[in-house]
Length: 113
Length: 113
Image (cartoon, rainbow over all chains, first blue to last red):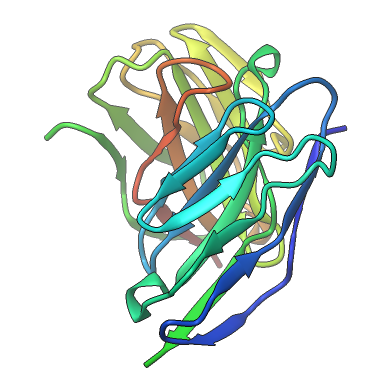
């Protein structure tokens, strides 16, 4: 079946450090891939997405590239800020499965000043 | 207000009681989803709906009932609440299946005593 695996947290970084959160997936066919972010006490909001192989999604300094050969969609940011502290979820969906999202378990990021 | 809303935001109930969580969206999105969020599990799909009067089970549907008589509303009912249903519940909607962004509500924190 379809599944998503993320690196475990929590991840603690100093401000301006480089961030990588690993995400790999298992799926048949060509899923769409997403990163969602959840700030404390809030719902999830889309951070970025990619719908086909080699696409790069980007937003607010975050980037992720859809790598079909390694079934990965790692999230990166060159210089994190305290305001990036949140829980990050990798997810996939497939059109012929109703578009429902399958999430990884989430990675908590804490950025210290 | 435009967007997706959930009510109540917090609910405490007792084992065996019926509870209904409400979800309302103003975009006329076709697809609506209910997820639950638990530590260590990320978000898991309970039920989803592709249109009014069309619903289908997700990963963890047992103990839940949904209906969708109007496009904008998608209530989730716990017929006889159990402690294992203590969780944070998120409703989401999207216009298309697969590649489209899902927009999440703020969540309902449910505690079953």
